[in-house]
Length: 121
Image (spheres, rainbow, N blue to C red):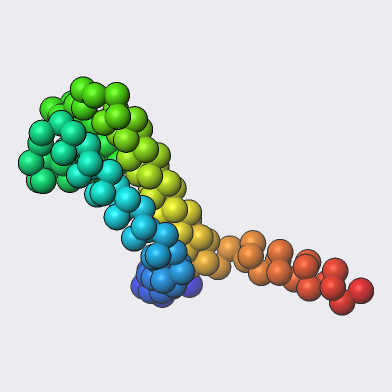
């Protein structure tokens, strides 16, 4: 298989995977933004700072330029981090699945054939 076809197959599989999980990804992003706004409200930050904090924390970058001081805000920051890790894990899983499909690995097909064989007997 040439590289152009492999890239096309990867992009197709990636978009197919994103079509399936986009509601979950959207929910996680919405939750991160909402929690970030609540943290910002508690800490007296602007809307831009609050959203910036949510994504820097959620993506586990953590520059440290904004840090919550109150217990509630710190607890919500932990939840933002968990949402970000889940978001990243879902994207990575979709990308790995798409790469496996694009490379023609056949692992999924062999599993499907084994399961089909079990049902046929």
